View 1 (tube, rainbow, N blue to C red):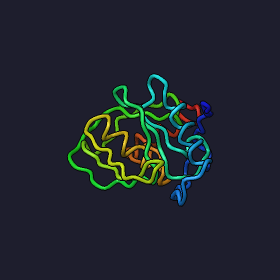
View 2: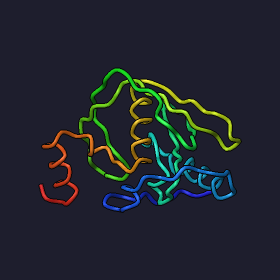
View 3: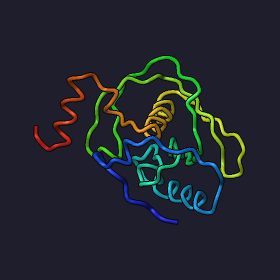
View 4: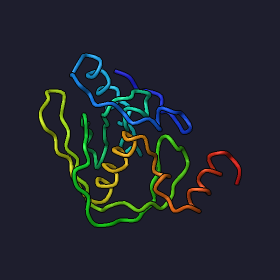
Length: 160
């Protein structure tokens, strides 16, 4: 359908928890197609609906050449630990070492209302947690240690 513009911090939609999708409507089908079209770009691992200005619980992903989506995702399980650079389309140019669980599992539904389970380690685990955070109104810099977070906020404001 369309490649949508990415909302960036401090857009308030990024800090607003997203509403569950109550019904699969033509608008929800268009949203999914827009999420898939917009995430289908090199360097993009995931994209939540609020990053394109839609306050609904949905995200798309682009991991290891596999592109997909999930509606009403719930982060069911995490375990282990990983630490690595993390970035975000809504915080362009900022990359910071971020602690996450190594493994994550998300359960949601597809456009037919059937259950989807996505799980993985490494970048897949990181993406699942990152996108669920977005849908809960959080961005990854919220997880940084205090001094790193201050540094990120200064960078966002343009002062070095």
